[in-house]
Image (tube, rainbow, N blue to C red):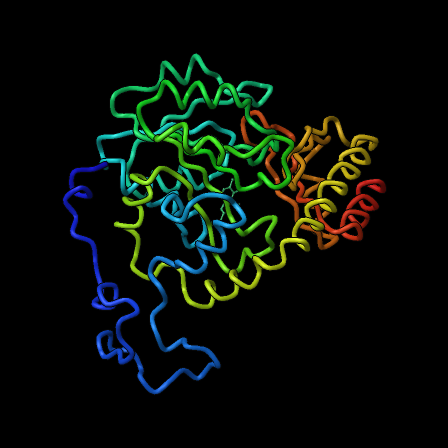
Length: 340
Ligand code: PMP
């Protein structure tokens, strides 16, 4: 933890101190008369989101004190930099091709980024990672299933890093609900340096609410809570996410459907002449190499379908990343590709 963060006196409100003991709140300069909306939106939200965390805890099996909620998991990524990395001095390791925000957050925070490319099979280059770590390496970001390649990272490799690396190992599980591999949440009691990121933006279908989760040891969570903006999860998000958690059966149905569609789409893509490779996916998207990715991308745009052109990314040369859509959307895509 950075010295300035260790010494930080966090922002606190008078209300934190008197929780449940008062009924008249004249401490926070809110509008005491009400809100134009039919909810208590005139009041600041619970800074620690205890009701929502309690509901999440029942689903995830992680105690509240090991749970941090962020304005998307992107906020948790940024706060990890701010908590652990001294600008201009420390470094972090990322494993490209991977999710772009790790690098953006590093750059925003003026923290050196060390890239260790994945191997051609999209697994970790353990030797190079070991060589790249030095005493100023504070974070390693492992995205599993990895975006944009779609595969899960070998569990034993992640465990080896957790055991041997002194800093924080961030396992980003944004796509874990679609994976054959199990979550690392169950390893939290084993490794104090493990941070597992998950999100409500994917399988839960709540990208617009901006709600992400970081699970870790008490020490790490306490630091994140200390430095986060006081009201980082707004009341509407807290209320709506709380309601959404009651619909887990629907979410599980969608996951099953997405996985079935992913496997069908992979098979059908594989059969097309223009497709040279379909990479196996543990996520809700498919990385596929095609003849002339840019031309196919442009054709799809002309037809009103947007995919992600990853053809210029190292190890993803010639590839498009295609999110699994509804059955109808996937059929529309396949029809255009068949006629290409
Ligand atoms: N991690 C990964 C691997 C992602 O792909 C994404 C979104 N594309 C995120 C995190 C960000 O999630 P959130 O919406 O919770 O900020």
